[in-house]
Length: 488
Image (cartoon, rainbow, N blue to C red; front, side, top):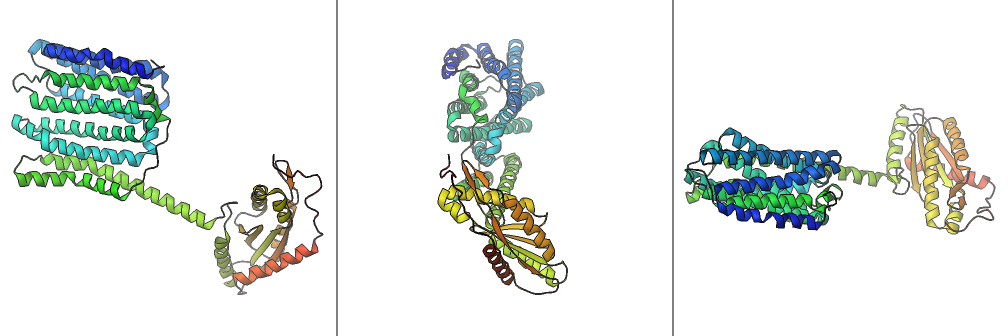
């Protein structure tokens, strides 16, 4: 079963179809057929659990537990029918049915946790749309039927909760089947399962006898279809793809917002329309449906706020840093320099030092070996400069092959740092088969405490000092003879 193929699922469906016909033979046969059908997905789950791992295994174990509880519920019905002529009723019967559904949903959510986490927005939207459909189904179809039958408040609330749960799950499964192609076949089997389950609930509501609480045979037949389709989904090899694929990008477009707005408005609009038409309306639908819907809306808004914050942070980072080296860019450097100059002018720092760094041989390297080598050289130079400065000093890319270092201190501080940087940049940079020069000339400009000057003037002085240092250095003979001319 671990090496399941699409034929495995098809075989399960074909082998189980006779159980639908068995439902036509009488009440005892119906519940026996449903009990046998419940065993089919349980067997598939138990066979495949050992081959799962991590949260995936936990999810499958929860689904197995839920299916086992539903199997116990069906056996309980069969025993009660044999003894009293009617299916089981009361707290135990209701609790096992509800617990089985809850465990199934929890298991499915756990098994698909990775995908659901990556597609949280899409899943929340799908659940909200499913709840809107549940409101229409309950308010227009099922609740009026319960009113005609004289169902008690407890029964109405219990049935409404199951409808909301199953239909919200249907929305999530539709989302999974539509957007994730590798999961589509298993998703379609699951869609058949939850649709048949919902249809069975409608059939039981409309055809159940008030005397012996037995419904028509095809209501049980729909239960068999739901269970067999569930087993086929579990046996299909595509069912595990949700744990391994990434969901497509999901955007909250105007049309999608309008659709979600309509879903949120479904409950109140439905109640108003029913009241105007004089039709029976369920007050619990507005309260219960809203209690379920509001947390989903809040979770969706929280996700949107988080995504907005992440986008703003990314934009700020892109606007403040150089894309190639990751260093602060010219704009960020200028803003920081203005702050340092204000501190120095107010006498709150020992002074401001600007180091203006220009690579001596970058043009030759770039022209000889191309932009790929040139870009790698700039990144390596940036790393070496950053490793040379103190914590709190700023290293920025000024443009091209020019870098600027800003720090607080005296000329002696700047001179020591310039020497460290020149030493760090002296060794050639090996890039593949190329040995490139990272040697640089450094100009120093300093302002003292209490002296007012501008960032532009200080940078001009540092630039002029850098050119003086460059002219004073011996001419470079780069690239050296024998250097490879191409990257490997």
